[in-house]
Image 1: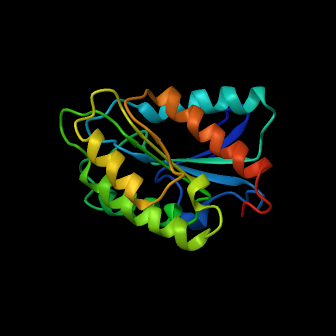
Image 2: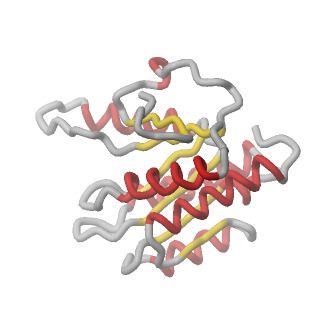
Length: 192
């Protein structure tokens, strides 16, 4: 669903819409997925989206579609809720033009699924965009995230040129995503 409070970007939230139920967005929208911790994590996605909206609006860059996997409500009594969440994330991660991953500090978990998604989608971006994949990946760790060193070295070993930001806020993560948007829009010949 497009979030009416955003000024500069359209927002799709999970899993209120499936891939097949999304409104018809123009094909030339740059798709960004805000992958990262949810369980036991503060709503860092909200902070990131608000910052992105300010940056994009101030720079008149309106052709962005942001996918936020955090649900507004989670029905613990619905046994199919987890499966729908995973399906929604998988379908939409496969379509991203920019893959962003934020490892948020949590008392409950270090985000093992995030590590799986990090490896999978670095490889997917390499296959889909062989000439510009490094410009399409933004990885950040939160202040105090316990596995920052692991995230850094695994990402660095995957390839030079990936944006890796250690010990930063969601606002700084949004700044790095905005930099990736600008690089793709203005410095590459074909960003889709």
